[in-house]
Image (cartoon, rainbow, N blue to C red; front, side, top):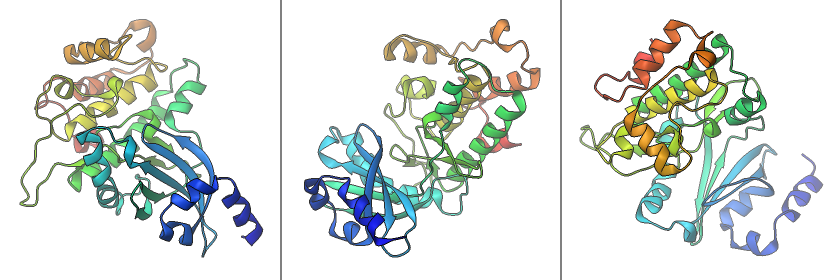
Amino acid sequence: MPSGHGIELQKRIPRTERSAMSEGLVRDYEIGVEIGRGRFGVVRRCMSAVTGEEFALKSIEKRLLSDDVDRECAEREVKIHYLAAAGNPHAVQIHAAYEDDKWVHLVLELLDGPDLCDRIAARQGTPFAEPEAAAVVAALAEAVAACHRKGVVHRDVKPDNVLFDARGLLKLADFGSAECFVGADGGRVPMRGIVGTPWYVAPEVVTGRDYGEKVDVWSVGVVMYMMLAGGLPPFYGETAVEIFDAVARANLRFPPRVFRSVSPAAKDLMRRILCKDVSRRFSAEQVLS
């Protein structure tokens, strides 16, 4: 990669922001244009100063972490992302991490294509064909199952966090809400607290009960339903409170005008995934089988 390209990359962020970045990060990578922004920070392109390879740089601004849950998630993210991504081809890979007084920086695999949310929106209400939806759900279930084998629960599985590489391989992204559900002694550690995005959270989360890794499976079921329903969610509300009420009731329906071409087998699988009774809800491994 010509050195002039690297200089151009560096000029695209303000000098004040660049000077605030970790010295090691600025030494190892040339920082480029912004490609995304979230509640707690920004995602930029970056390029290895040694190899010229491009990556995504996720920078989390510590002052925006307003409560204990947010701060705990940010502190864990690097460790959990490394754990979840190791040997998992369906997870966005993490290549390096840096921290300074104001920021946490993660150097991640760069995926330029549209995410699953974009793919659903682009269809303008047209459902996915069942074989196409099945392929996505199978890959997503494998991504989740691989995390669960490592003792990691993602807690924010949604179309926005389902990315694809240049070959079309699905990649689960954003481990900012992830948690370990297996303790140092090998025992299960129950979780509490509302973490995730309203449309996709499981009933046990919104009702304040202890929960485990099957919250991810519920979210996979919501994604599957939306793909087969042209973007319509299974549990609807105009506000977060209304959505949480609908999720807590978990009254799953398949309107005939939307689902008339969906097979009984697919509907049965969604019933087993979007099951309010956690003991009867499928695990990620059972979804795969």
